[in-house]
Image (spheres, rainbow, N blue to C red):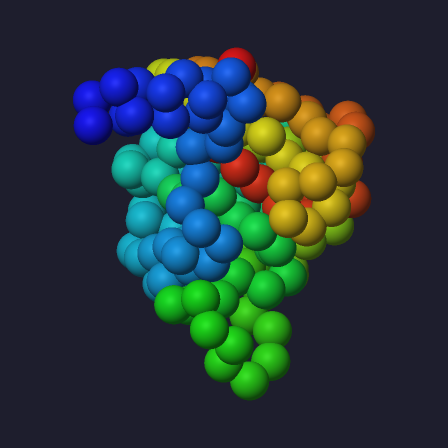
Length: 153
């Protein structure tokens, strides 16, 4: 059994596996947690913040878990009768607008993982990578962002 687990772990590392839960598994936390919109970026335990404006300005949202589709972050994973977009909060330019295709910068407070902002939903397409403990103006995905995932190298 130990050998089998070692082989599975080695295969996972070799594939550069995402450090993400299954799609929508943590939609409830991203949608409903006080960490998302009720705490400042500095005070939130969520490690990723996405901003409406460049240079970390305007409205933003704290996000704790990978997001399959910013326009449809389902609570509990099952369809609930329509899309459930993640919106910017915390006031300023872009407040209450949908995050999908509206972001210009991000902050990554994580000490280990890269924050990857993708052009397409489902962690696909071109991407902007933010190193651990960094902040980045989006270039490849500026105003063309659809999903986000934590990843290791």
